[in-house]
Length: 223
Image 1 (cartoon, helix red, strand yellow):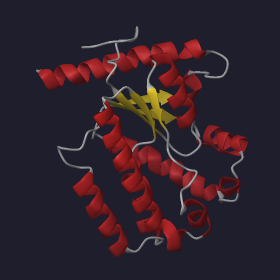
Image 2 (tube, helix red, strand yellow):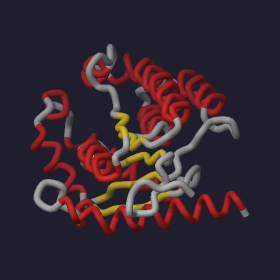
Image 3 (cartoon, helix red, strand yellow):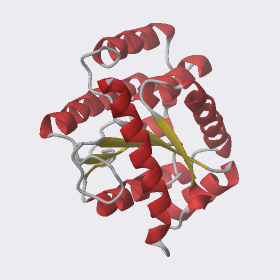
Image 4 (cartoon, one colour):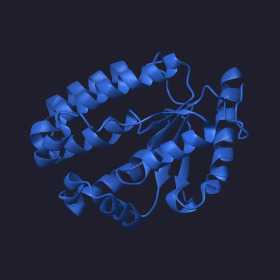
């Protein structure tokens, strides 16, 4: 195994950060990349032609938004592996279908036909042996009050105007989703177990555990 860091993490690894909105995925993505000398792959919010419209009219724009995210994440996932790895990625492609599209179908803000079309496309593109999956998915978790506090602190207008009930439902759905997720190895990290603003060394135990996870996975693949 090729290494370029003291944590036993291969320099061609792809690590994805998952978790509900506001939990700190982008901050963790940058911090891990800095520690590992990896590149970053951030979720594209600016330039999304549907996002603002979606928050004002879920039913009208949910299908359009999900198709847009699927196309963008699919292209990005392929790019990471074609480049040769060495990336930390902000948000996974799996959350779109397992949480967001499912939620809108169940709440009636996406029609059954649209949901079936979206799910069929997702499975054909992503859930195949040929699609490259991350070496490790890090799931950031914490209490709902902690997450809500972070949402309020960052102050995005469209998030402030969204009812708290929406964020609570999102939080609960994430917790249920991760319990059943098995497409790639998962490592849970509580957001209270590190402090990226005052103590960057608090990431070291997490990085060492990440190295063990990835090493175990690759050993199983080779055996």
